[in-house]
Length: 168
Image (cartoon, rainbow, N blue to C red; front, top):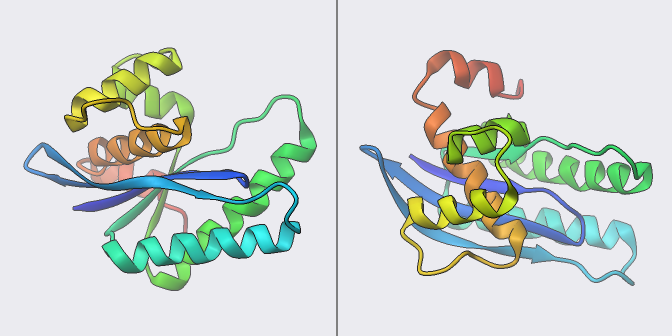
């Protein structure tokens, strides 16, 4: 199974593409779609859409896994990230790829085995599980790979897959 993991944002959208076969991970690609702060917001959204669409077309994933939004203070940032997340969902939908959502707690539990793990622990375990020489940068990229790993673990359970899939 080829999985595209995404850490949504509007300045930096981290992505990671992994293949998961027979309980073994292969890292295929990772990086970030970035947008400049002084660019019109609608242009930033278009760049995110185009970038995610290009990655989907290149790797033809069987699933897109996305981290759910979690904000507790800045409403403006939450709204902007939600809009970026919307174009990511649209790119997946138009490409015909099913989308699955995971909370930060689910990602930490899946990657580290502990839902309250620190970010550094998640990044180190992601590096180890994928056999990478170093933690991918920017952090959003490592987060996206962790979300892909989470889906790889969750996809083995039919019930888990059904609960996390966004209706298409």
